[in-house]
Length: 257
DNA sequence: ATGGTCGCCATGCGA
Image 1 (cartoon, rainbow, N blue to C red):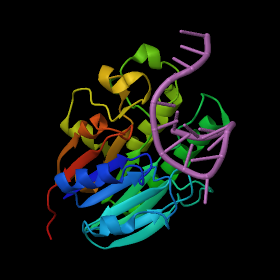
Image 2 (image 1 turned 180 degrees about the vertical axis):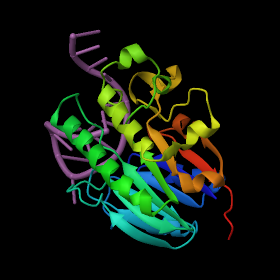
Image 3 (image 1 turned 135 degrees about the vertical axis):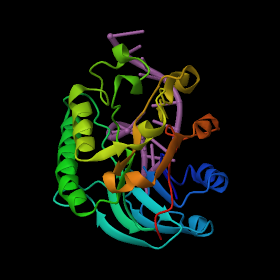
């Protein structure tokens, strides 16, 4: 089973990139972030024609997350239970024998701004919720855009990024604490060398490889025995009018069914 | 030191 996550930065602007990529990269489950559209305006038929069932949590203009799956989807939660949040950033589903949560963590704006404090609050509530959640459901996959670089290796230059949003000590500790609940960072089970998933649109960052690793797939311990590999596909970032993020793909071996 | 580039019910805002 192949599971991908991709922040597409507007699904309607990126529809040809996403469908072309899915035709060349078979995936059973796809987690999409930053749809930037309502559920009514999501191009459902395009993905149904590719054989996908669709679960959506959308809003106008900003945010928005989706889960696509080749098998039927049961929506568990829209939004983090117990956290009041008007933004469409968390969608938890059951499909293909696994619980998958698609997440778009707030960017955070300037360090110590209201947006930054909201980001930390969001992460705190996420941690508290997931701690009790995976105690009950141990086949749990959390994937998406976390807007945090976990380790020094996950940014192009630690000095430039020092005390910058997405790389502050507080944010990295918050992400480490979520991992510490009992998740494993799927990419790091496969790949040790520096691997970015995002490059700024500005200044030709992709050509200078000035990027960061902001997109992750976390596996709960119940899924570890099924783990095969994880990879990042950088090629869509080199197309015309790309998303600033690229897909991360995790491959799980077939379970006992 | 600032702005740089995108996408959005449109023009400043969020990323």
